[in-house]
Image (tube, rainbow, N blue to C red; front, side, top):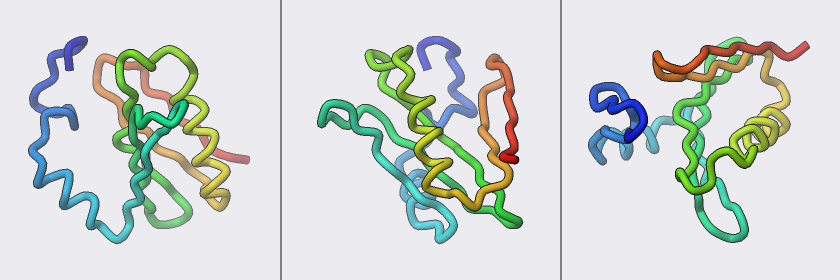
Length: 103
């Protein structure tokens, strides 16, 4: 939020009811990201058709960013959802969009 001031589309600016609604979606899994026994972020995995998965959001507290934690989390969920052929990661417009497919 501080970096981009994106108050319209950032998950950080959504109301709590929207987050609760997402938690109850049957195709959605949420996980806390824990580092040294401290909850420092979370990731949401959305199961789509044809072995496709979408990550939105993935967030890490600012003081833990830049340590490779998000990358490690992505590697972990790829192992957890080993049937996934396509992974989608939503980013804000200011960030480079990267797509990947498993072989």
